[in-house]
Amino acid sequence: MSNQNFFVSLQQKYDKSYADMDIGTVIKERRALLGISQQDLSDYSGVGISTVKDLERGVGNPSLQTLQKILDVVGMEMVLQVKQTVK
Image 1 (cartoon, one colour):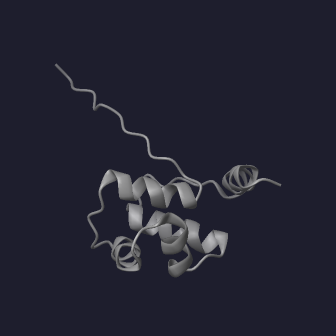
Image 2 (cartoon, rainbow, N blue to C red):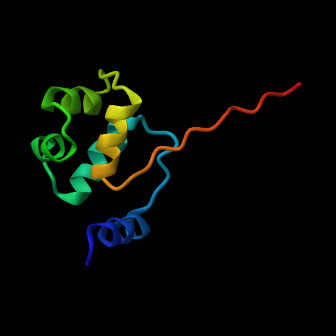
């Protein structure tokens, strides 16, 4: 099974609403689900271990590029939308 199919399979099996969770908690849960350590996530994504730890504790302020690298490893994607305004 390819990595992409593995991640899709995991997402379908364990998908849940992350709407009310901060991004650090979401990443921590996905990382745990995949069975990888913070060090593994750091190594696979090319992001420093302190950045991964800070993000998971909710004290980090990563760039969108850094966040995308981490999300790629845990099999998630970031979607940005323009907020609708009421006139």
